[in-house]
Image (cartoon, rainbow, N blue to C red):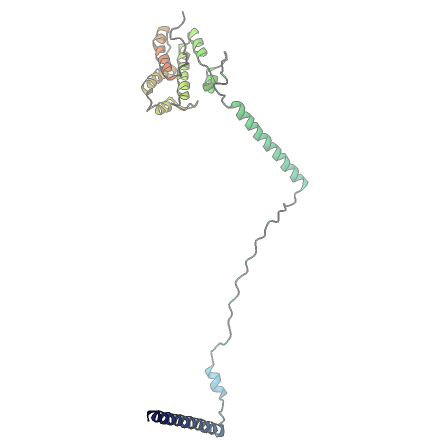
Length: 249
C-alpha cells in the first residue's frame, strides 16, 4: 500500500515538472516571435547635438616620452695613446734621473745611519764635541774625558761626563736620546725613574758649568767629579769602567 502511494506521488511530481517545462518553452517561443514581428522604428541622429556634447573634449592619446638613454662608458681597451719620439725620450730621461735620486738617498741614509755599538767604537783624537754628539751612541767617551782632564779643560770634562750619562741612560731605555732634545725633556722622561733625583742634581751642575760661564778650578772639579762617576757606576752595565775619579798628578 505504501509503495503505491510513493509511486503515485513520484508520477504526479514528474507530470507537474513536464508541464512547467513545456509552459516555459511556449512562453519563450511566444516572446521571440513577438520580437521578430515588431516593426523597426528609425531613430534620427542630430549632428548638432552630438557636436555640442563633445565640444572641449580631447580624445588624443598622450604618450609619455621614453627615458633618455644613458651613454655607455667607454672601456679602456688596454692600448696606450701613441706618444711622439721626443716625449718618450723625455720620459726615459726623467725616469733615469728619478732612479738616480732614489739611489743617492739610499746610499746617503746607509752611510749616515748609526752603527751598532758592539760593532764599531769611534775613538778619533781630533773629533770635535759636535762630532761626538752626532755619533754619541757609538762613541767611546772615556778617552776624551781623560784627555780633557789632562789638558785642565774641566768645563769640557763636565760636558763630556753629562753626555756619557745621557748615553748610558739611553742604553738602559730610561730616555730616548736625540741630539736636539733639551735637558728639560730628559728630566720629564726621567720623572718616574729611581735615578731622577740624582739626575736632576747633575743636570743643574752641568747647566751652571756649561751655560753659566763658570771656570772650574782643579779643586772644584775634584769635588764635583765623584758625583758623575758614582752615578755612572750605578746606571751603567757591570763591565762599565768610568774614568778615574782622581786627576793624575
